[in-house]
Length: 312
Image (tube, rainbow, N blue to C red):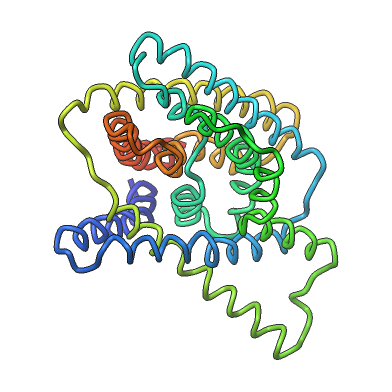
């Protein structure tokens, strides 16, 4: 009972901040453009700062490639399964398969995982996340562009991937880790830079939670379809996560238990929040379906994560 209460006490601040975000929207205390600005700060500054600091203390091993490939393959398989399920449940919505693949790790996963397992373990989720990041940049975005009648430009996709602040921070962090232990360096300038990055990283969780709460809107009309899609997605992904944990992370790589929790955490997350951005504005009904699915999936992900950490 004590462990359960301790876990809930760690997750409760996340829930309170999300509720605060919803209150800020209801009370019209801040406008949507403010939240858009906060999200830009998270994606381009505070989250990269977090990942950079994390990977400077991480020893990158070649065996992690097996995790990248496993996660990437799962994303591809889920997209294909989404096209099959679409024919049965929602044949008129061409964007339907996209809600089955990819994960919103950046704007949700890192905060949830870190609040329970600490910043020292974020690199484990980040390593697992790289496979799906590559999938989103090169497969999911390309797929969405084709749905809108636009040919995917390999050069544009590659450049957007390379210039991504998240990718740059991970690469730079790994590069710094190879240079040795910087914690022993005594330099006012050097220490000030790292302290600034640390302060920025601490802003990530509250800004993300407030943004999620502000944009969490569920349309009760027609909730059945999005709810069914979310449940199907979670059941499929949890089954795949169990298999990867047993075969890859445990048997082949013999990694610690927190890696398994990190994988379960990511596979419980909602689809990427960027999906609606790439949808045709004329597809209003289909876009509303996707937005409703993202909101429902966000709530169920929070509930499922709390259950996961209590049980495991």
